[in-house]
Length: 215
Image (tube, rainbow, N blue to C red; front, side):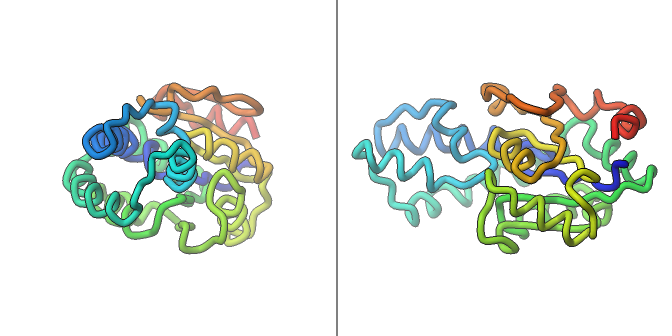
């Protein structure tokens, strides 16, 4: 029986990944004269940028992490501060709650960003639990965020559905032994999603009653 929905934030609830992608592309072109591909950017989607930066280091393209944050963080805040919730998100969350299903957030980012956006969107009180990078040692693609959420909700993995937009998120859900619903965005649609999962273009397409019947 489905008892909890565990949702990602970036790129799933609010389309921040597209904003970040354009910022990354422009920063690397300006500061490194380097054309970053979407495939390279996907390395850090759902996780963090360190793996990407280490790969570039090995190619002789060194990124000063502190300088990158200084150059990009404020622009990201400005460009993402008024983004709407993605299509179908609010109805999906409300359908879960109407059916007695818990709703949790599990994100590889810190707590402040999703909390700020969800409060702005009027969705903060719809979440029963937040699990962020501040709560675990390992982020996605490791399963720790999702397993911690299930544990705090006193549920088993088979009673939870992960909703994700990224390959790292899919892997984390699969590694946690949970079913995964993938809703790609304009960046992550370039990923090759494989394994035991369901993919849809938008949460607006999801019939929650039918989803409940699958468990």
